[in-house]
Length: 352
Length: 278
Image 1 (cartoon, helix red, strand yellow):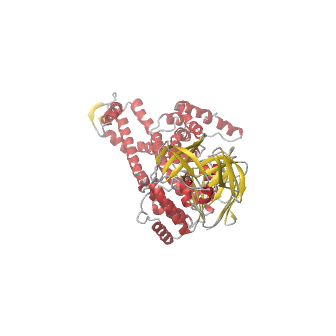
Image 2 (image 1 turned 180 degrees about the vertical axis):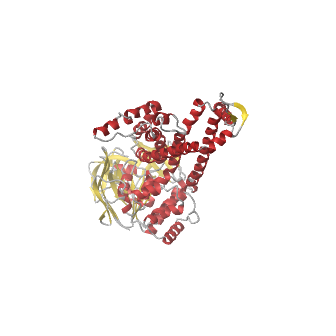
Image 3 (image 1 turned 60 degrees about the vertical axis):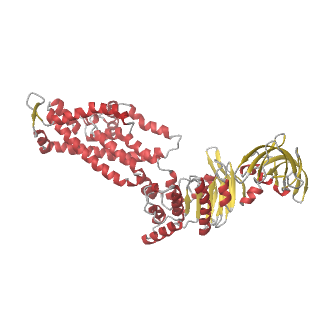
C-alpha cells in the first residue's frame, strides 16, 4: 500500500494538452475516482500513473518515491481495464498466476495464492476455463483477481464496469468497494459514470479538458460545486441567473428576474448563478424563497415524478417530487426552497 | 442450409476446370507410354514404380520441399517484425504502410523477377559494388540463392499480412496488463504477444509454403537451368519428353506428399491453437 502524489503532471499529444499541470494527493488506502466527460484526460492520467505514458512534465510519487521514470513492470501496480485485457490463450488459473510466475514465486506458493484469491472473488472451480468460456461478470472478477493477487501498492481501474449490463454494474460497484476496503488498497478509479463515482469514491476528482475542476467527497461535489460547469456536469441542476445584493455571515441575497432569494455561497460577488437541485424544490412548502409557476410537463420515473415548471420568460425549472400528490400540466403551483439548498456559484464559466 | 445453392456456380466451375482435369490426370498416370505417342490406353503401374525407385525424383522432391521450407522460414523471420511495425503503427499511418506492403503485388511476377536481374545479375548493382571495392563478384542469379531471394521477396506480403491481421486483434491493453503484472517487454512478447499471434503465423506459414512449393515461374526465371523443382520437372516431362503418364504420376506423388504434410500441419496447428477454438 502506498499513497500517490501527482505533481504538476502535464501530457501533450501534438497540440492537444491531455493533462494540464495536474496536482493531486491520494492517501494510503483511499479510493479516488477520476470523473469527467470523454477526452478530459482521466484515462491519460491513469496511464501515466501505471507507467504506460510518459508525462511531458511533472512527477508521480508512490509513497514519496518518484516512479516517473520507472517502466510499468517495476511499479507494482494492479490494473483492470474496461475490456478486462485477460490473456485469451491462458486459463483462469494461468491468468491469475501470471504475475506471480514472472516474479519467480514458487509453484506451491502460486497454487496457494491463486486458490485463495479465486475463492475471494467467488471463482473457485472455474480455474480451468478459458476466458471465452466465462460470462462478462466472471471475466471481470478474473481481471480483479489477477490484479490483486500480486499484492500491488496501487490499484488502477479504467472504467472496469462499462462493459457489464446495468443490473450487474450496480452490484459490482458495491462489490469493488467492498474488495477495496478489505484489501485496504490505494485505488484510482476512472469513470464517466457519476453514479458509479458517487457510490464508490472517498473523493471524486472532476476533470475537464485536462484540467482539474474540483476535488472533494461525493456530497461536497454534489452540494457545493465550485463552478457552474461542475454543478451542471454532476447531477441535474437548475440555474437562476442573478446578482448578489446583500451578504451576511455566509448567507447571501440574490436578485433575479423572478424575485430576490436567500441562498448560501462564499466569496462570490457580482453576477452569479444560483444552483437549485430538482429535489430541493418543493410544491407549496413554507419559507421565504417562493416562486410562482405553471406545470408544463410531467414524467413518471417510478420513485419520483419529474416536472418541468415554467416560472417566467426563459425560466423552466426541473422539479422532482414524490408521487403522492400529482400536479397536472397547466396547473399553477408555488415552488419553495430552503436557503441552505440554494448554492451560489460565479457566473463566468460556461456549463457542461 | 437453405442458402447452400449459392455456392453452386463455384462448385460447377471447380468441377469442370479442376476436378475433371485431375481425374483425367489420375487416369493418365496409370497408362502406358509407348515410343512415338504420348500414351496408349493400357493399364500399368510402371510410372509409379519408376517415380518411387528412381533416386533422381526423390532428390528433386526433397529439394523442392527444402526450398519451400527455407522460403517460408525466411519470410517468417523477416515478415514478423514488419507485421509488428504495421500492426502497432498509429492508425493514421497504417493504411500507407499496408499500401507499401501490397504495392509490389501490383507488378507482375515476371517484371519483378527481371528487376532482380538489374540488382543481382553478373553486371548488376551488387556485383558492380563488389567489383568497385575490389572483391570477387558473387553468383547471385541463376542458382539457388537467386531463386530463394526471389521467392522470399514475392511471398513476403502474404506472410506479413496474415501476421499483421492477428497482431492487430491483440488489444494493446493485454500487453499493458502483462507489463503491469511485472513482465519485461521481452517476456511480454514471448509469453503473451507471440502466442496470441500464432493463428496469423500458422496461416502465413500455410499460405507461403503452398505458394512456394508449387511455384514455377520464379524458379525458371531466377534459378535458370541450375535449379530444378518438381513443377518444372513435371512440365518438362509433359511438354518436352512428351511422357504424359510419367509426368502425371510424378505430379500425383507430389500432390500426395504435399497433402500429407499439410494434413499433419493442420493437426499440429489445431492442437496448438486449442484456446482459440470456441
